[in-house]
Amino acid sequence: MRHAPSSVVSYRPAGPADEPFLRGLFADSRASDFAHVPGTDAAVQQIVSLQFDAQAAMLTAHHPRAVHEIILIEGRARGRVITDTTAERIHLVDIAVVADHQGQGIGSQVVSEICQRAASSGRTVELSVWGQNDRAIRLYVRLGFEPGETTGHYLSMRWVAGIDTEAFA
Image 1 (cartoon, rainbow, N blue to C red):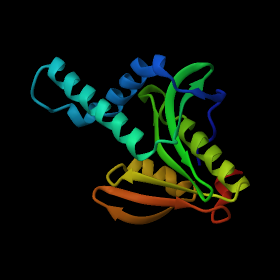
Image 2 (cartoon, helix red, strand yellow; image 1 turned 30 degrees about the vertical axis):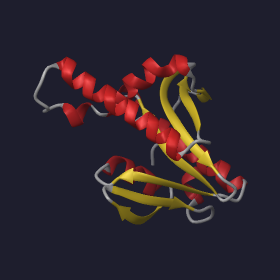
Image 3 (tube, rainbow, N blue to C red; image 1 turned 90 degrees about the vertical axis):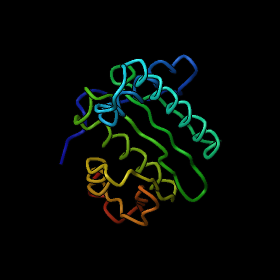
């Protein structure tokens, strides 16, 4: 099991001034998807920018109450997390960590904190993950998430307090 990062993880609300960082984070997370796309760098950047805009519009439409936060490591923006909370559940809408900080336990810590919040308030945690994102699926399974239905290319996963709280010890 990976240990929590040695650096302190904190959060702050995302705002309009974060858009350049969020665009860069989005592009970074999609780099492998576009590595073999023919065309100029400018054309690929334009496609990625259009996809960022489409994702932002979709998130606003489907999760109007969602909380958008910037993940901070030692006060510097290193990722984002979006959650949508109801009386019954916390929906982990999106989480992303910059590439050079992945594999350091940051994502594990963020998701674990969300699960702890859910457990203390009697909620479940639900998410959907790209079915071919094996790294993320392994993380969620290790943290006690149970796979559910596959819809399109996405796998639904659910965490319920008490099923595997050992992951947070």
